Every structure is written in structure tokens, then in C-alpha cells.
Image (cartoon, rainbow, N blue to C red; front, top):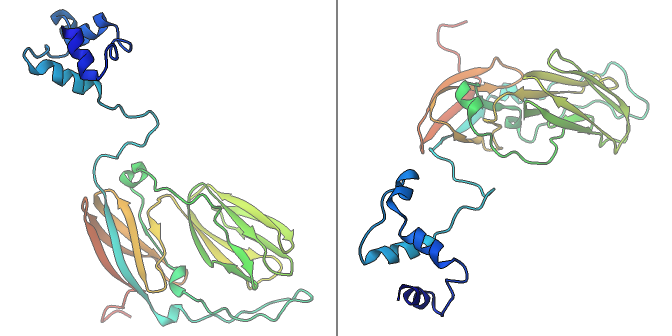
Length: 285
């Protein structure tokens, strides 16, 4: 009778039996007490509802191996507006010691977004180093040589990142750095060519060109993935920050790094307004 009841439950005679031997099925439905106790399971229910509960359990899906599992816990975010003083956006005069034949006269570059040269990041802590790293873009970060400038002028990257240096100009360039963080010399190469450098230590790496002495840029190598540059409107967001207390660093090549204490709550947003540089206090020289 029980086999017939199972067949009716499955919709056609013999449907369930072809998948599970009857004895195996019975042991799963009514396991002996010593078997259940040995596996640390509670004894099976006795009563009319036992069969229905067991059939529902047999149809329960199991997570597929390799499928992403939702992360436990919640993170917070930082959102704010940054403004920058005009003294930091005025183009500096370019002085070229020597010219390569055929090169155009040096001229200052007006930044389309001066805030792109600002980098806002959280000072590394054990909690941030142990946090899940945000998914980074798979494309190779680049500092292009365009119009005899490095574009972008400032590039923040995570430790271990490889950066490309393609030449878009119709003349030769020779990118180099004498930084103790990463010293390199890529040699002369023409338009359409590129070289790469991997940055394995955190710090500031000034970049220059051997041929055009007035070209300069910066690679800001960070050992935290929680960094951002504001957009043209000054808006910035840092997502996925573990709850806790941190120091927020604001970096610009012409000022001393600014620091601000921030508190992050799970599921919350910490809002900030940054003035770059900080206004001088009254009474200070």
C-alpha cells in the first residue's frame, strides 16, 4: 500500500521506484533510531505528516558548487562633495630646457577636471586589508602620452597593478622614474607603441620623460582598494567599507595630505564635505 501511495504521489506507477530502491527509500523515510543517533540527527517524526514532510525534503534544491554565496554581514559607504581652491587649479608655466626637432613649443595644459588630480582613500588598517577586495576592472590602467602630457596626470592604483604607458604623440617619448618606490626607464619608443610597469610597493611614484623635461605625472600606489577621485562636480563615493573607525586621507600633489576621522556603520552612509586645502585657522601664520 505504501508503494502505491508513493506511486500516486509521483503521478505514475513505478516512477519513484526507478530512481530509488524501495528499501533505500524506506530507510530514508524511517531510519532506525541507532542510525539517526549515530549521525547526530533527531529521530524521525511519527504520524500522518511524516510522509509529506519527507517528500518535500527530497525535492529541496542544493547549492551548485562554484556558485557565488551571499556574503555575511553588512558594509557601509562614504559619500561626499569635494571642492578645490583655485590656487591648486592654475596651470603652471612649462619650461623646456631643450627641444626635440619637430616638437611643438611647450604650453601649459588646462585641466578639464582639476578634481581628477585629487585622490581620496582610507588609511590602511588590518580590517581593510582583510576585507574582500572590490572587483576591479579587467582592463589595463594606462597613463597615455598625449599632447606632450601624461594623461591622466595622477593615476591611483592598487599594489601589484600593472600600468601601460602608450605613446599617442607623433614623436618619441622616454618615460622614466627615479622613485625609491619604483625606479624604471622605458627607453625611447614611437607613436603607437606602449610599455608596461608593475608597481609592487605602496607610495608615490613621480613619472617624467627623458626627452621632454617639462612632462610629469604621478602614480599613487595604495595598499587599500578603498580609494576614489571626485568627478567634475566634486562628488565621490567609496562603497563596501567594513564597519569601524578610520582615517580618510585626501591627497593632492601641491599640498600636504589632509586627514579626517570617519565612522562607518553597517548599512549606513557617512557624508562628508571636503575643502581642499583646509582653510587656515585664524591666528596661524
